[in-house]
Image 1 (cartoon, one colour):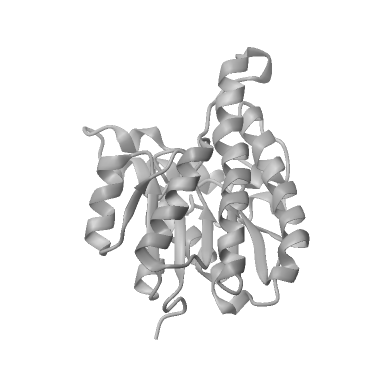
Image 2 (image 1 turned 45 degrees about the vertical axis):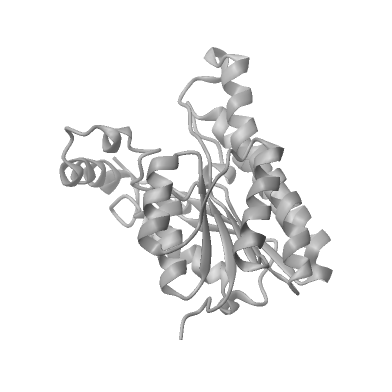
Length: 258
């Protein structure tokens, strides 16, 4: 018996990285997962492998959310959960950040999360309640040079999470946020997108870097974030709402000596 047997969950940014692992784990735990992404080839391949439906979803577009909700209801008749995983990261000093770049990150990370909550929450309420899990970041709890736009949007996601948790509690919808630290995904490790790169070698290089920065001595794995998403989506967290959950190997616990 799975922890999500019979539940219908939309996972955004599900074609790769954390979203892919969430889709895989949720499927293994009995959920009917709607795989949503803008990376159509990868997303469709994953959905076919898992035996789940795929929907093209640009989270910054309201019309795409309307279509995704309709597709989920057509496939399964209801929606019980949402994982707002999709996001983008740009490296730049604040004073060197063009407005266009700033707004593109805001549109995907912050507006996308807002649109997801607004589009899906009424369907979850109609199903009798459920969960929303928003992906923030450990940078939502502090500052970090060179990722100011990203950090600003992740701070905003925590605000959205807390307000949504308060407003939706009476409809039996729990809303929480995950705050991952450094995780070995294509977004944080672009070398994973290089077809000539050795994935094991790049992972070892990241581990060597984070061995000196992270108390647990390594970079995080997307599977570990997926397990936190499962906890927050399942009844194991039935009395938890409005909370940020940091999963960073202890990074924020203190400053490691390099």
